[in-house]
Amino acid sequence: MKYLIYLFWSLTLFSSNAMHSQKKSKPMYQCLPCGLDCDRQRYSKPGACKTCQMKLVKVATIKFKNIAPEKVCAYIAIHPKTILLDVRTAEEFNGKAEPHFGSLKNAINLPIQELEQRISELNQFKKSEILVYCSHSHRSPQASYILNQHGFHRVLNLSGGMSVLNDSTCKK
Image 1 (cartoon, rainbow, N blue to C red):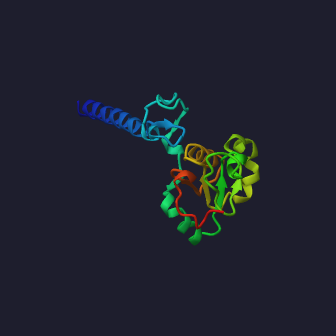
Image 2 (tube, rainbow, N blue to C red; image 1 turned 180 degrees about the vertical axis):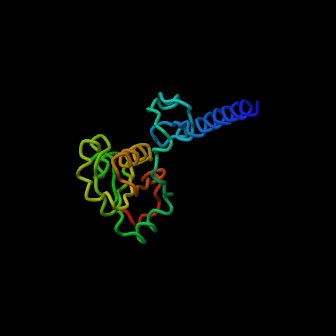
Image 3 (cartoon, helix red, strand yellow; image 1 turned 90 degrees about the vertical axis):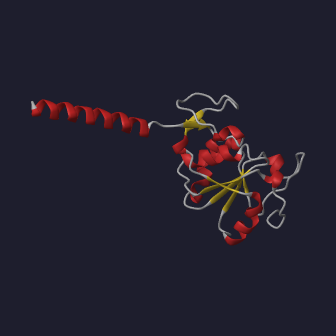
């Protein structure tokens, strides 16, 4: 009888632990970072974001950090080896599109539309810190995510983009 009680107790404990560990390890999803408020919404299964229609990705795969616009120029001054990646179009980067928000000094321009096809051009910077920006922080979170997925682990996203960067000390 003791054996049956022990067996029942063991099976109950095992199934309870298995169910508990499944609940703990169930992934949560959010939209592919788009820079909108929906980036904070969580979903229990893959699909598309109800707000922006972006693909839902596992939250655990989003590893880049954000930096506030009021801290960017000081950060660049303290970390001069940071690679600055502008993911806007060439026209935006060169000031030939309206509105003109300017660019960061020494930035590399690689439009998000071409990022995945040209990612190998950035391989030399894989171990470097990369600060990604665009005009309103809608494209740069996506680019930051793409960089993470291609093995770039030190990625910063400029929150709000160039449209809210008031400090001109780091602009060209």
